[in-house]
Structures are given as C-alpha cells and as structure tokens.
Length: 63
Image (cartoon, rainbow, N blue to C red; front, side, top):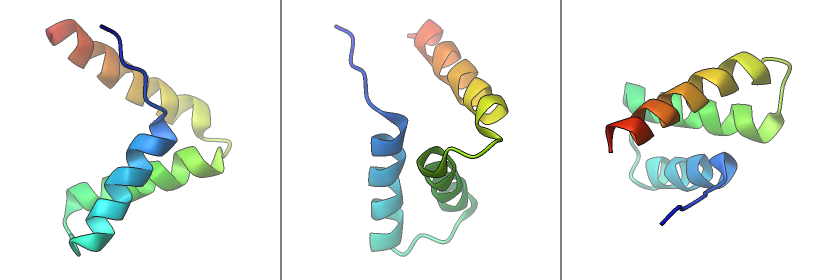
C-alpha cells in the first residue's frame, strides 16, 4: 500500500506538535524551518527539495 502525504501537511502537523509541547531542541528547529520553507516556496526550493526527496527515497529503500 502506498501512502502519499503532502510535505506541507506533514511538517505543519509536526510544527504544531512542536509548538504545543514547547520543544526547543534542534529537531524542532529543523521541522519548523522545513515547514516554513515548503509553505513559502522560496527560490531555494529545488536544492532543499532534492535533499528531502533523497532522504525519503533512502528511507523507502530501507523498508
């Protein structure tokens, strides 16, 4: 079974959870950065998108 989730939806939910639990660690900072990045669609979209896609592909290959 294949499950597709929008990156904006995924990082938005993770950001809401990080804010709700008052997480202030490095992981929360990365999640909030990625949510802002995907929501804004800046000029840096392509390189960061390729990194996130490569990570997702490698995790998919592990399972």
